[in-house]
Length: 177
Image 1 (cartoon, rainbow, N blue to C red):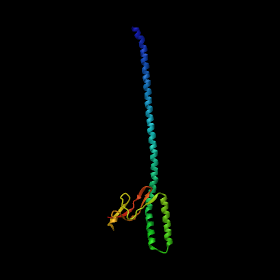
Image 2: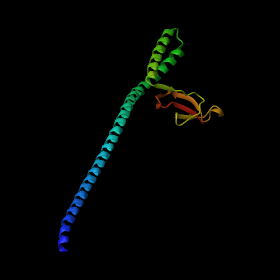
Image 3: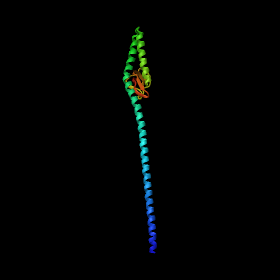
Image 4: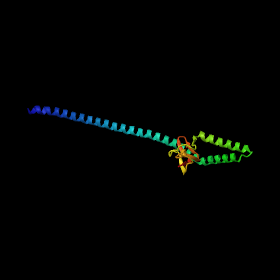
């Protein structure tokens, strides 16, 4: 019997070794699959991060152009106000020199059209409109001449302007109490 055991032992040990090798091969294969999955995950994350970076930089670039325009427009707003004042004074003077009025109006219209092409628009506010904190800047309150004007705009001191959808200067108004 001992001989049979000895004969079986080499076979069993060979089978056992083969099983261990297969287990090692399987575990090596599993490890490689896990490493591959990890590398794929890293790649996908890196790719997604790069796509987000591209989107963010393009948005920042567009915002930079808008901001550059906004700075220029903000500087030009007092000049537009001066044009309005000059036109009002020329009209009040009612001089016979209507050519001066035509010349100033021509320059004013040309400037306003050029700025409108770049996205600048006037926020229209009239006396009697309802005061809205989101849209108007109240400079002062005065007693209203009649009850209809309580809480409404009595006078517009400075026009407001929008660049695209963004308000760059709120209209400055006087409201009635």
